[in-house]
Length: 117
Image 1: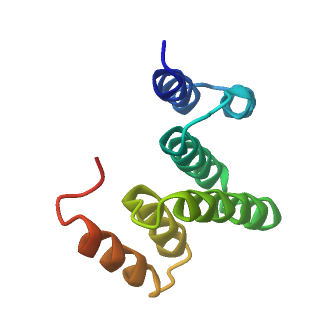
Image 2: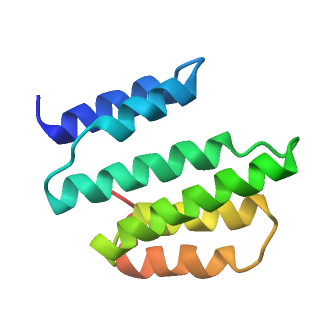
């Protein structure tokens, strides 16, 4: 199984898991070696942390969103055209009802009008 396949398998298992923290730990242990695999890993981590951000617990939410933003920015450092990371950053801002979300969505659209691959 390739690294990319391992990342996707673990990500999907984590997304459907009743214990996402355990899945996150598994995802973190996968050793991504190529730039593309590292970008994919950061995007998956960003997505998972974003979804762990619970509005019911503001302190926890702020921390999870911060970690998610960091992960998405790491993906963008590897690939400034990473629309998945741009959309993720936009989603975090939408959840906060921040109109700056539109900026990230517009950037993603300009890079790839058909959406992420």
